[in-house]
Image 1 (cartoon, rainbow, N blue to C red):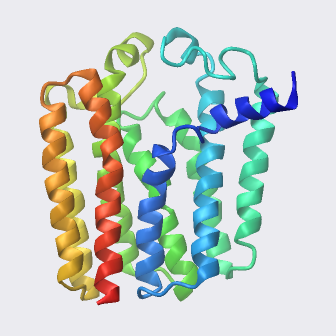
Image 2 (image 1 turned 135 degrees about the horizontal axis):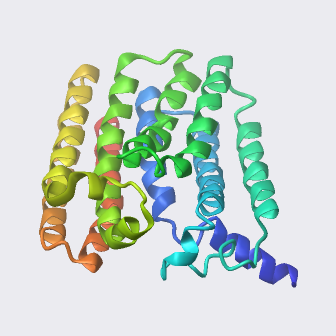
Image 3 (image 1 turned 60 degrees about the vertical axis):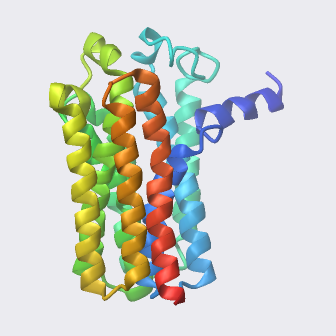
Length: 286
């Protein structure tokens, strides 16, 4: 196989061709970076956490495909993935995931000891999440912790401690992840039933739409409480109101439980994260 062909397979395997996952992981990380930096985070902190997010998400995608290599062959949407189709070997995939994780770890070596210590559970969460769908009825909650662990790390890197508001932001991200990944799980509901895989869409059953909207409400309520704790101004809360309006649009998309519309809602969550981040930045600027 030519090098260019192999690199293209790596590109697909790490989902760099589908950046929505990177954005859903990056937005909460940037919330933490900006808030912990009091609106003026150091440039190297922004760079480290942005690149670290990209690398760890890519590593997590490889681990996910490795974990699901025997499952994906039974799903039409995933049976042509590089590992499942045999174009990338399992051992090669593990090495790729490890190399990406090591590079991500090297990025944070210049930071303080607490950040380095927090990187240990962060790596464990990212590496173990793909296996939780076998035994955890709501693996999306675990995903929310994994996707949001950049928040306490951002506070640790800049303050050398993790205040209560950081954990509140992490909890908000857990509910947000349950909301958007339930929308994604609604797309794969029939396949998950057939394969015996757990998902929040199956757990919530006929109450899936109500559960998604409840999780959006809890996310934004917790972010509002966090804003009050931090003394944030009007711009921050306007950002939350924009996010509320976007979540209401998602209700219109998912209420019919049509696969294409549920997937559209999932992808559209990028704008919720962006609206909240815009509110944070604007509030500090003014």
